[in-house]
Image 1 (cartoon, one colour):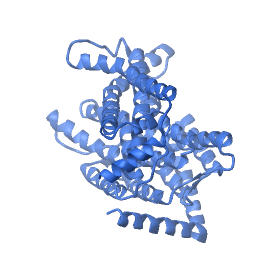
Image 2 (image 1 turned 135 degrees about the vertical axis):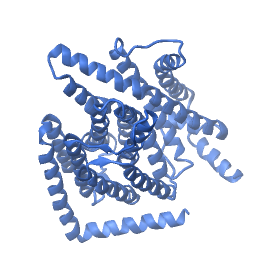
Image 3 (image 1 turned 30 degrees about the vertical axis):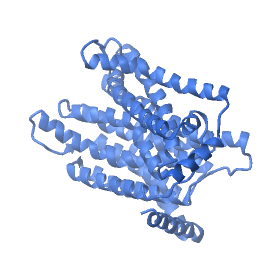
Length: 445
């Protein structure tokens, strides 16, 4: 243990910061904490009854304040997670980071699900928020990672490839995302979400996390405030990591629910002022506007990674986020719905899906299937990004073509799968990735 500490200190001494740089990084870290505080103080005072905040009258202010808090906390948690790689396997850290980053999504969606037991229309919000966030991760964030990486590459490393090369261990994320995707294909045909779904999806995620903890560590390349924290004494560094994760998690939790309610109020006001249908306006606000803010931690973290030319880490983070959204988030919906029914003295039953909700889940599963088959060659290329973005944009602009786009995703997915099956090079690479990952798991038991 003493040897490890000495080696760690020696490593830190090789990355000492000059005083001006140290001051700059310290000020940046403090700034993110200060930006987060206004809303966290308002919400805390409201919860203990010392202050009253009305979403109806302060909807826009609530949306802005909570959005700012979410973004600031995203920076805080990204820096903490980078330093955490010094102690834990990178796959596990990225999985943990993915969970922390989507806490706003969880809280917003769980809130809508809880309310669905009281008000039936909230069922639409719960499903639309979940499916919108899932599709945005692949259709928008995946291409965004590649764009940012290519911009950074052109400036700092022109010789780097014009695609994102996945690590061999990413086969772990791909495998479990494929498992959860195939299971979620069942849901629209089953017509409901039940506690059986919760059990199965939680089990898939549990096995994934267990295996992720068995992957080997690697030395992280730290920059900015993360490097500042890494140079702290051991005890202080560990305390800062814990504090930053806790602070950011609390910020996400305090911001998500009021952000969701504020959007519903804003949707109603926009519809009233411009003559739109109120229910449609609320649905669209929850499906697309809410995920933009609640996914902003994810987006900011992966942009930072991609700009640092850590494109593989960026990609791994969003794939891991997709796994926990397709497992934990979907699994939480029937569980929270059942608990809410019991609390409100109603008979426990599955959450029934109407036609719109079935189509939403089918489209989301089809997009996930297509994207996964696309990266079985362990590369994410420009043509892949264009295809994902075009198909995502088409169903975004014309929502009524959900079924048609779902069919296109599935057909293209099977065409790509056929290409994989007849390509010896891809099959050999997959085999090597699987063997390497299995060996890593065995080595780190």
